[in-house]
Image 1: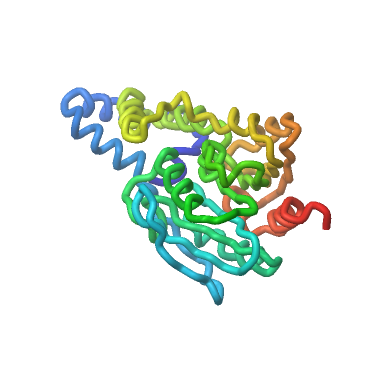
Image 2: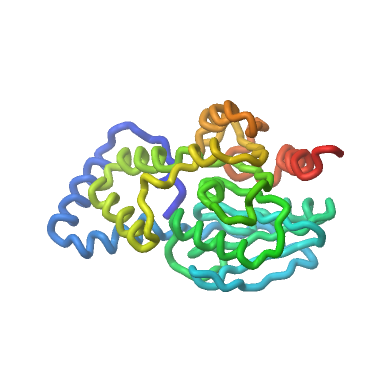
Amino acid sequence: MSSKIYFGKTKRFSFRRSALSIATRLHHRIAPNHALKTARRIFLTPAKGKENNLTPEGMVVEAMDTAEGKMMTYQLGSGPTWVLTHGWSGSANQFFPLMEYIAGAGYTALAYDHPGHGKSEGTEGSIPAFLSALDGILNQQEHIEGVIAHSMGGATLLESEHPALHGKPIILVAPVLKYWENLFGTVEASGYSMKLFRDVVSDVGKRYNTTIESIDPFGKLANRQSPVLIVHDRGDKFAPFSVSELATEFPHVSLVATEGLGHGRVLKSDPLKEAFMRIAEPES
């Protein structure tokens, strides 16, 4: 499913949304099990993004076992390790240019494809699945220096309580900090049956022994003790820049605002590279 269903902003009425509302509610009433199966496919299946970046020379590619299956990892460079985690319908390939920069600065860059994304196993994705995969990757690291997370990957990172993250600096790129508010608002605006969507959310929650109420990236950001640097474009159409601005009220959070880079191009930008050096080597 495209990121638009998760991060869209269209609120205006349309016949198409009205028809979708009637169709999905009727489907749920007549064939609830089939409707739920269909809804899971719609909401939990990521779109396969294009991998436009060439694989850097020296990249080590290997699969790591996690509770979500084998996650494909990509490692470049030597020195202290920075982990990079992508967002919905993304992949580690988005980070390749940044990984080259990190490796050139004397660090190891370790990215991976989330469940159902890129070349990793799995057919479905969700915050709990992302979190399980992230913790599985961190379990296999002796030490990490910090983490860079994009979009929904940032929401996932903030939910993690893995000991490897304690006290570690974080860079959040175009984060979706009020994830559930944004998601529910978008699904409701689409016209899709909210009862059916809530059944999907509940189904996922039961599998991972969690509830929607417990997932609160913005609240978790407030409680973090380590420095957090947000890099976010003012014109981002998917993740609200205003929420990142609000997050700077927390004393450990700072913000780098960009212009004209949108939600994805910011990953290749000079401001992000400068942000990395700023947080990785604060005294340089």
